[in-house]
Amino acid sequence: MTLGFKENFLWGGALSANQVEGAYLEGGKGLSTADVLPKGMMSSPVIPPEGDYPSHTAIDFYHRYKEDIKLFKELGFKCLRLSIAWSRIFPNGDEETPNEEGLKFYDDVFDELISNGIEPVVTLSHYEMPLGLCSKYGGFTNRKLIGFFERYVRTVFTRYKDKVKYWMTFNEINSITVMRFTCGGIIPKEGENPRQLSYEGAHNQLVASALAVKACHEIVDGGKIGCMINYGCVYPMTCNPLDALDALDKDRRTLFFADVQIRGKYPNYQKRFFRENNISIGISEEDEKILRENTVDFLGMSYYMSRVASTDAEHLEKAEGNIFKMVKNPYLKSSEWGWQIDPEGLRFSLNTLYDRYEVPIFIVENGLGAVDVVEEDGSINDDYRIDYLRKHISAMKEAVNDGVDLIGYTSWGPIDLVSASTGEMKKRYGFIYVDKDDEGNGTLERRKKKSFNWYKEVIESNGEKL
Ligand code: BG6
Image (cartoon, rainbow, N blue to C red):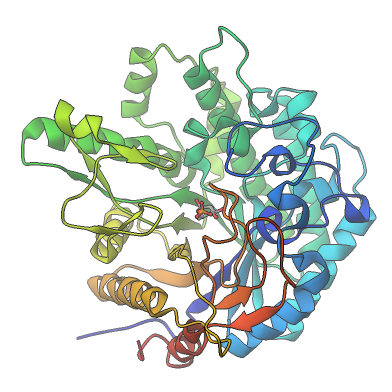
């Protein structure tokens, strides 16, 4: 028997504040960590920023959100995942009172979504935080940030509790192990062990995330709050038991974050990892209690690619990648940016995660970054994007029929936006084209691509018509 997607399945798209809003200093906003990252330098800030930074103007969603939301409505979106820029609410991060203009901006955006029948799904911190928390306090390695984060989330829960019911804490929280600055505002000083800093920051974020879960449950009536991990299953390169063990180990580097947030405690394997890597984390009894008592309601995840583990030196030498260094899978094709395309891996991943946790899963990012060509007649024929999404949604449907409790799917960047890893505009994910190039030229005009009508029909038919 095939089951298909639930009736109230949350179809939509996903954005982040710093990749769409622009207006980086308007409305009383302070500088954020994203505002000091030059193009393609995910972890090398320049403070103060000089020149042209992608987040400063982005696609000007700050001024154009009404027009964009109208297009999302036309697509039939049930929800839109977006994030709040923490630095619009607390410009330096450590103020006692929030910035009213910032709060008002998101009030307007949420009202606009709701009046268009679109449910807001909100990430509290998507690859950014007030820069002041980095320069003055050293980022998330400092426990004081737990308190600042808690103040921020309590403020937004209280303000938006009647408008927003779906929340997520830290975007791709596991990425802090490789992108310390982007995820945690951490800049290692000479002689400091970067890995130690990453896991200290991670621990403080895990505690902060659990406190956000607590606050959400206290403040938002009927609210649901999830974690958000960047996940891709890990295949062993061969059936050599050593490759299989390596795959297990690599998988655990990610699962650790979901284990803590869903099961409420540090797993034993992670303690061994800390011991063997000279990492020592001060976990107090109070922290343990907070983690234990405040687990998330659902698992949010992004899925772009699967991974391969190998213990063979020859394969390792050829490993490459973007956020995570990877061994190439010879059975898969790659995108123009070298990200390997694996729809079956999505089915595999969903089953793995659901077997392990048995909590509802929400795919909050997935999609293809590609170069689009505007034809002379103005059309954009992005069949490659349709093909990618069709295969991933089919795989997702298979996973649902396998028994996975999937509550929604928001494809990444339904409107073209600035790439997080490269700062480029030409790495496009959207159903809606934005006229802007990598040098910042263009009218910012929005234009529907071929995939626009295709995705509209997918939503209309609740995933039956692919
Ligand atoms: C995810 C991030 O890792 O990947 C997004 O949460 C990001 O912010 C997306 O944009 C796609 O990556 P990129 O580098 O193509 O923008």
